[in-house]
Image (tube, rainbow, N blue to C red; front, side):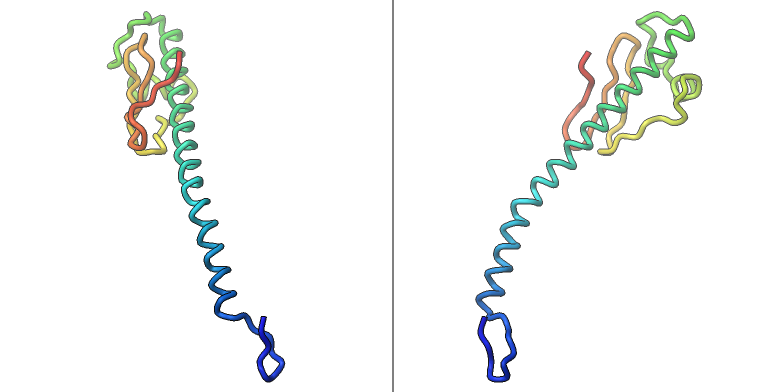
Amino acid sequence: MKTNQNNLRAFTLIEIMIVVTIIGVLLAIAVPNFSAAREAARKKSCISNLWKIQYAKDSYMMNNNRPNNTPASEFTDTALYGDTGFTTRPVCPGGGSYQPNDGNVLPTCDYAGGGVHTIAP
């Protein structure tokens, strides 16, 4: 730091530019990592919702003595989310839409951020 004639201390232009450059480099490193972490959290939330849909399907089929090959048309919102303990249909955090599929097929989501998601058996 340089002192001026009144004994006041101040930063020079070079010192300020170095600090701004360092902050810029740190932001360039942090922002992509933040975006990737947010995308991973959305994917995990989507897969968690798919597990809930599968649980609701299984519960519906067991409660109503339905076979494993129950068609997807039977899995209405009222059937899945009214009688199985869930209050509302899950909403995909990435803006996709869930497909419950037939009874013997795992549910899927056409997730906007990363293709079609499904759960591992």
